[in-house]
Length: 430
Ligand code: PLP
Figure 1 (cartoon, helix red, strand yellow):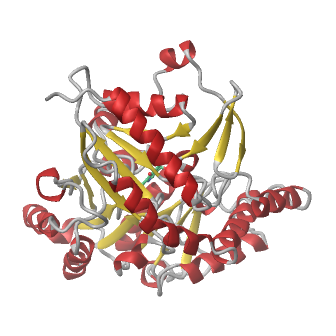
Figure 2 (figure 1 turned 30 degrees about the vertical axis):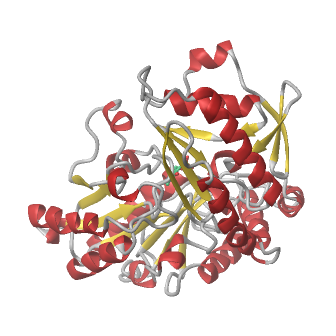
């Protein structure tokens, strides 16, 4: 099983047998509130009727069509819809099957784009500490989680990392974007001075780091990164696998922060998790760099058997309808202030050392426990599950990322359950 202590799981399996709306049904008969939208993906609620109906209809019409030198209309309709949702000037899309594939695709497109422009000397990639970019070799190379890198030995050459932006001393209990830390973006200038900026192809960041603890960017940080990239001709990639499609109350994090990257990697919420799919959105300039030479030549030697899969396209089109026509992104934005208010009410509980939030993303950081890293968060998450709430322990932090269809009473339930779990489980050092 992925990222799972397999032997422990076998001793006490946790099995989900059904889902509806904001709930899971467990094999033991209990009903659990889904505080993490599956795995940060079921934004429109489980078994969303629009998406279920679209999938049932699609399977009876067209099961599979290759996207290699042939196509089907829904893939183009979806690409069109995505470019309408994307920040202005991002009118081109490449389909993948996951966040990991989107990240590796975005990195490859960035490298190939420089080469297509005659700049093969731009080969370096810059990621960030405490970044999670999936599990492809590109993603773990630019990713910033030691264990996920060291497990596999040498990774991509020519990769460097910015410092992470988490700063408990200056920013603990900030609401939304923390006020301190724009200076962390200046570390990019230092890295460029070290390597020669003309060798750098791209910088990749999650606008809000998710799996490493829900870390909203310091105010002005992303804009500063954009300025530095522009100054040196470096492409900026946002990994919006979590933040895309309304998680922050806007279509993309790029919209919320007013910073347009050159490429956006997406997945998860694109199909509401119902069928695997990812997509890389790119600026016209990136796309156009490939469109020269013979019209019969393949412009990009890259792609997947299931790129633009008909079932995935059907699910995605219905999901986008749910987000826009059913107003779910607006619902996400409308609920965020209440979510923030309730989450920060946990401040003052023993062992709670930070609370972070942006949109419908939240993180409650707990003091490290002497018995091992992440043990408090794991114990709290287990207590929550035993009491009807699914949350996700990430390091020392309890992460929250509920479906947008959540009601206020569900937010209350999340906070009440967390409150009891923290009180009964956490053993502060002092
Ligand atoms: N990028 C980010 C920011 C993610 O959070 C994830 C998954 O959690 C990925 C990439 C990888 O996505 P997948 O598991 O679909 O490959």
